[in-house]
Length: 279
Image (cartoon, rainbow, N blue to C red; front, side):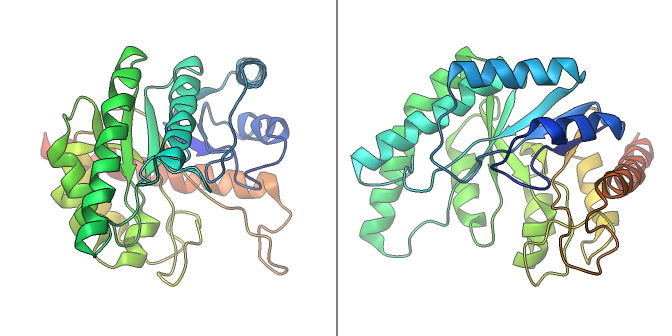
């Protein structure tokens, strides 16, 4: 019923110890999130190694966080940068297919306010999507654009431009909580919700806290998910294990994962109950 991000401690370190801990905690699915904000390209041998680790721990990938790049951006109006960013996203689409998942989450920033830059931005996005979508379709992978702090208008335009079979939304309630109107956005696009990065915060920062530990309205989110297009049994939790001295979970990896599982299962039950209520 639950997947958890494999980078809950470090997005750039060796993932194998984390995968072992995830399996030991009872999770059967993972969200592959390593190198999500970098220009790193995974080689074939690395994908083979990750696939081997997943198989050895009997873990399945629920979804994969693609990278929009640190310097390589598929939405750049500089064509050299755009093409490098395109290669980066295609690398993740290929990797998603190899690891057995059908969804990548992808960041798309807020569209520029200046008219000329806005036009150039959208021309770049559409050129890239014209190449990405056939590549993704051939591999059975959909693109889920993630809500950030101020990109709701941008995402509405993307949804209007592309088919639901190809493009949807990955909703992050932590980002939505910081934006203030995130749940209104989620409600408006519920028919296009195909992935989630479940986490909490106090609205002041992107803290990636345990579910129910912040100020996200989880009751309302459960109702939205229940009425949405999301049809997978498993939902993804995307957390950051606390490191601050004095925090109850600092240094307690097993305890943190146990609470992640407990709170995740509680929310999963809320969604299940909400679906039954709609039935």
